[in-house]
Image (tube, rainbow, N blue to C red; front, side):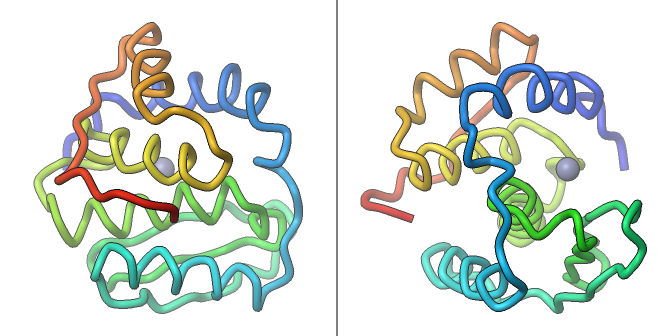
Length: 145
Ligand SMILES: [Zn+2]
């Protein structure tokens, strides 16, 4: 599927989000990763994805829509990575045509990051726009993560 915002998104995440949110890279144990995913899935009313661990240190973390699974590398046991991958899961289940790092994915990502780290979601979306990213929020859900 077309993923036209992919490289822009990665550059925004690397150069803006990770600096704005020092806790992005705070480590989590496996159980905390799963508990965080479960909490977000419950809130967004999507089924919990299958979680697999990639043992290689250098392994990438990724979500796969085809079988609704999250591969989490050992390095990926971090708040930011877990929220990034679960944002893909929500986008897949609610806007399957969004395409990778599409506008709904970016909106969901901003919502999860904003709620988790107490940052204005609108501010995050405005900053994403500066990097040329389109973002759209799903039906606005109130409250915390
Ligand atoms: Zn991604």
